[in-house]
Image (cartoon, rainbow, N blue to C red):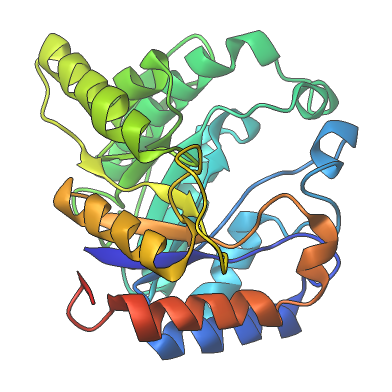
Amino acid sequence: MKLGVNLINFGPAAGPDTFRQWVRVVEGLGYHSIMISDHIAITKDVATKYPAPFYEPVATLGWLAGVTEKIEIGTTVMIVPYRNPLETARSLTNIDHLSGGRLIFGVGIGWAEEEFAALKLPFRQRGAMTNEFLAAIKTLWTEESASFNGKYASFSDVSTAPLPLRKPHPPIWVGGSSDAAMRRTVRLGDAWHPIRFDENWLRNEGIPRLRQIADEEGGEMPALCPRIRLRIFDSLLDDTRTMGNGTLDQIRGDLASLEELGCEHVLLDTYYDEVEATRDPAPAFRTVAEVAEKLFDLSKGTVR
């Protein structure tokens, strides 16, 4: 199992100096990925949780490609309707090349209605737009001369070179826990990327429902690549806790359960919706270091 870290690309400490610290810590410890989130217009609904300064992910991924060496880089998640699929496919292909084929494309439909309004995009059509844009992006990533005819995107005879280094394309991780998100994962993605859940839901509801939808669609079961909120406590938390929250022993058990469930890649998220806590990234650095030193052997990809 691979283990990655969510780099906090927003808030009072965000900027190149802090990002360099994140890279030194995360890549230095041997983590397998470092990923960032996405917003374009920091409207009031966004700012309550993800305030400015917010570093746009495409530009930041290009920067990360140049300051990292081996670690995978990607989005958790890019909001697909925000960008024309021609732009998304081109920019991310370039990043895949600049990074030497290390890109992961995590995607979602978005949730901030005010941000959609600011971008003049139809909020209630965001699921349909995401489905169509993903299909268009996959066409652009796999055909040297691409054409596509849809409701939200249409183009013909577009030269796409260079195609991505990763074949057939960078892995697509689809976020969300609804039936629509799971169906999108089976039809258009490579991995399911749910966030912030408890073990009972994942084991007894989420994974069985994903498997059922894969059977209904006649598709393969996608890979499991979840994101868990990481926060270490001194005292035991009760059974209502989400995975990644608890004592070191509880979190070790969470990682062991995710490994047993067949997860290929797990992303650790040290942000717990307290903006002021991001002003000093040192506690987050200590937390991911403690996981690497005490809970998970990153060189072997196994729980200690």
